[in-house]
Image 1: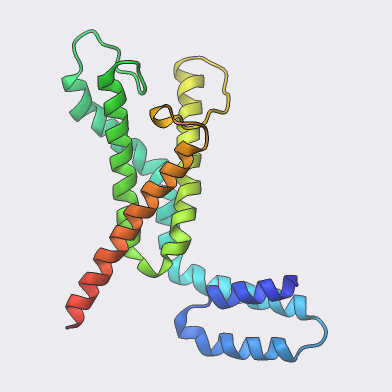
Image 2 (image 1 turned 45 degrees about the vertical axis):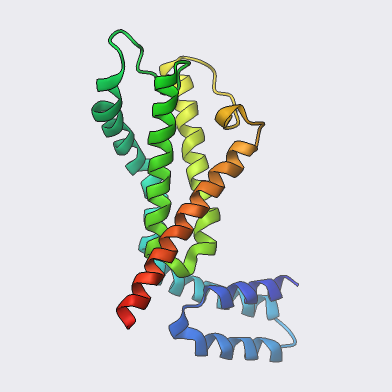
Length: 202
């Protein structure tokens, strides 16, 4: 059972230029009567190495942008877009009770995640089904880290887990909305890339 799953994963990870190897390994695996788990694990390691070589930069960008690039974006956004329009004397908090701060947070956060997913979808349309759940997990981790850092370091409050209460929706709805935002943006990027490729091929 486990060996079969490993071989399916191997087949999914194998780059197209190694398709013949993948088919050969599946044939060898089917003919094996003993040691199938070890054979499948070995094939998976080889396929993973090829996939990492082919898409390593793509994976690095997916992980790096939320944890490093978003801080730069947020700092620029607040310094150049939000602070100039906040009334004098107001506290420039990340999430505040007033409409200006709440709207500013929504737009700067939503925009950066949309552009991030759009770019990832345009870069590797064929990996869209992998990109969406991966981006969701990474971005949610970054959001929760940012919230914990703000509460602990800036506000001096204990770090506690909180759901994303977007627009006062129930728990988990915020996470689902977040995933849908990334999925729609990445899907749009993939459509743009495919349309451009078809136009170039004509």
